Length: 176
Image 1 (cartoon, rainbow, N blue to C red):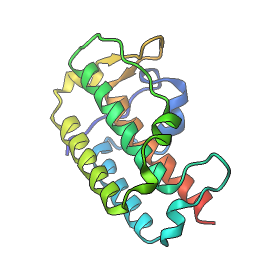
Image 2 (image 1 turned 90 degrees about the horizontal axis):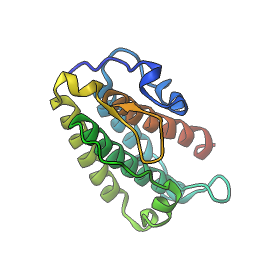
Image 3 (image 1 turned 90 degrees about the vertical axis):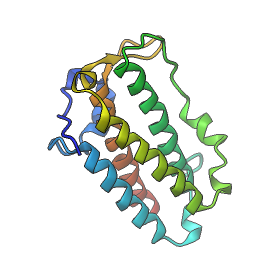
Image 4 (image 1 turned 120 degrees about the vertical axis):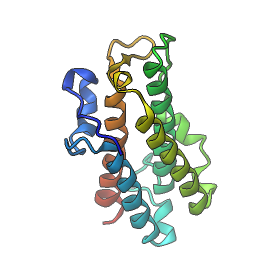
């Protein structure tokens, strides 16, 4: 897989540092995306079924909801990366993650079905970033009403870090 250099801090909003800090700066972000999913899947399948529905506090998501949230986030951010890579200047909306989760039906889905979707989305994500022209990685854009620009390569790192962020939350809050 291709090397994608770590984005500079001015290539993404400051809040994204909470995700970027999890991703090694070795340029192997696509390999990390592949390996992260393997690690996540191994952990989740090792859990008893009742843990998949556990909420560590009122209003917090279940593990199944976290998984579907990660899928939704990846789809949305890859769409943004596609628009930026193709130099599309269309204004892009944000998304309300709690609403997406509330209406996802995650807890009614079989775990195998969730991971089938997750693996399909991840494979598509890796193929997309692997096939981009080098200059497309440095193109950028921002969402409607937002001045925080993000480069295409910063989105790849966001995806890897966002997933690791949630993996750490699962380990810390759900496996006590």
